[in-house]
Length: 472
Image (tube, rainbow, N blue to C red; front, side):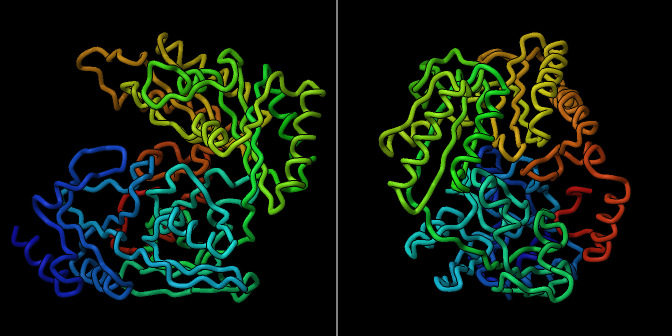
């Protein structure tokens, strides 16, 4: 308790009393956006500017105090998990949108800015950020950057990494490294921002960023299509991509079990099925453009050709924004699967051509182990990213008393991840490694790569204070 009080006083001198959270007030906070469990930590600190954040980190460094950074708490790999010995630095007060340059097409934001707020701000200038994901209303830009988030627009605009022009971060000793570049072209030595993109806060705390913007494409045309075979899914992707002159912005695929779940009337929040619930595969394809008339003509022609070529067997073209959003709810409503207890979530990437055999092998092995298993598959197929959810029991059925759920999870993960190595797949497409996937990282990265990661960590954070234990 003396240690907590002493640290709290040092932090309060930097961020003020309102910026330090301890005791009951700390326990009232949740550890994750999806989980109501009380937050475990020694102290939570909420800096309101970059200098105060650097001072807090400097205090932690002087006291050899481990730090866990928090953004929107929407990650899925236990990357923000903390314990009673940790100090949490929350970026929630560093949420300012500092500047928008409509001519240079950039936006400068603090790391705690919520993605949806950034999207709304740039839309007022007829611009858009090439990043979108289901957690847009909660996730923060700093979290997006530190995990190199993917999402729904990767097909057209790439991962978060492709959106970042400049970056500022605080190192483990409190040093501020500011590389707030606003230029698209800048070949002046090592691109230091890459040290902090996708490294999950293990090498530094992202504080501010300059993000690249694009002209707004406010008009969308969407297709929900049903397919009977996987070769139709991949053929439809190739046809639409070739026919839409670069305007295809999303290509999501739902396997039957996931579509069935989200259209089941017995579950709250279900979507009324726009197409029969009996098809093996469903595709949500969307293109966007600045010109509605040209887009509709091009898109509808491509959809008609797809039907004529036998690439789809049934389809719906929404005629209103409400209908479009209803179709997207089929994909974005991932909460329903969490009615299964337990259930194990996965985020993998692999070559598109390898997907049918991979999924068949994984599902077969899982059902050998758990005969009652339900296996949900959906994802951003065009960029090779699939999301898997394995539920050993039906909704409403519980495992036997005394079951070691963690052991089940490891066993399930072995089955899901092991085949990826031989086909050049990745155990994490967009969620990161965190604590959850460290055990299997060697399936996707070589010993030499892992050694270099460790050396980078040892160089920039020799005391192992920042997000200790993540990745390697």
